[in-house]
Image (cartoon, rainbow, N blue to C red; front, side):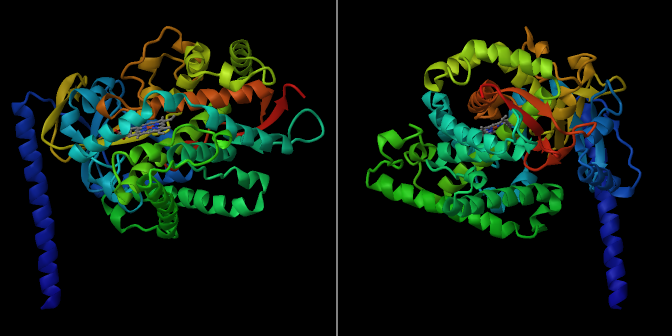
Length: 526
Ligand code: HEM
């Protein structure tokens, strides 16, 4: 009897699922017709429910070739650049058409949300913050945070110089007898640098993770705890993303304890800051001569909210949004520069001309925000790095109502397409940025000169666009410029020590090199 009941229940679920699936398809087809939409190209699956997609994605991920898989599978029917597929039991639309991307991010911004999957995957770690919210909550966060990213604070580079000096202190220690250093991997050092500058900017206290590399006993332990916990917590969160709707049930080993370490460290600093704010004391109470940064994000934010949980999550959201993105981008820039010595030398010559040699340069006087912004070739190098290696390879928005997108319908892809409420629309920035139709036959090559006279449009979205454009864009461009200037002033040559034939990719919160950035450095002024 029980067996019969279970059997009947399963049959009922299968029938119910099938009927509602086909009814939905029928209703959507009717609505699409009424709106003058044309059918999208459908990607064929080899396994039921699109289960083959899991294999394809997992295998590419494990082989560190995820971006190449995107190019192969997303460009399947070029030049028609929008399609739909059934993956993991649900329909999704995939586009690399700049016109559709502009519609999603700007023109039809109100029709799309981040969707519940991002919130579910990140909730225990990132809670309610600008990076995870939608609607009114997001608007509130954006209005509260935006003023913190304008003006003087973005231009205050004293703290960046302090931490760059720590990085430079570490590098010569690795030198051998001749003028060349031994082989080092710059990538983890650049990640530590970025964690230290971001925590100092946001919290008024640096995580001092670079001290790990100079072996200062006491602080090393403190730094290691926080830096490792941040890495574990972000890695675990990214792993949850892969499971889509099942992410709330996935708890990678050690993830929650890493999350707790990060939360309690930030909570400690926040509660200290709240006490100081109540007593009208400065959060950053170092003596003036010890002060590296005139601005502390948390100190300013406390003027808007005193809720400790809101403060924790807003700070953490920005830390995660800004730290790995900047570090991986500088790493990729060096990755390319050491493979093309002529570009390295051209950039270095311009840097020396504009900002002086390492020993002549007085950073506060010579490396200003305005001068960095005006240094075109330096900006071209960074633009080109973010084109070829956008930190976020793929992004998703979810329709919050029945809507349409302007392109992708019909055989030539020029017609409107219907997007039903709840449908995820994914856009692959990696594929968009390497599309030959948009970037020319040399789209795969690192060629900063292509930016000479080129205007930025919807074919280039490393920072996204529209109302949700990256708040830290200016901050990131400034910091990346600064780090490159100091490194190229100090080293007149860098040699690539990595022999892998193609770049391999690790995907954490951002896309970074799986082989690191292995180089030998040659000091300019020994
Ligand atoms: C190369 C460096 C960076 C890149 C490529 C980058 C890219 C992005 C992208 C693509 C988004 C949109 C995410 C989405 O809506 O799905 C974003 C959002 C954001 N970024 Fe960045 N980012 C960088 C650095 C930074 C830095 C340094 C900060 C802060 C210190 C920052 C703060 C933010 C914030 C707060 C948001 C959320 C904006 C909102 O939703 O309204 N980013 N970033």
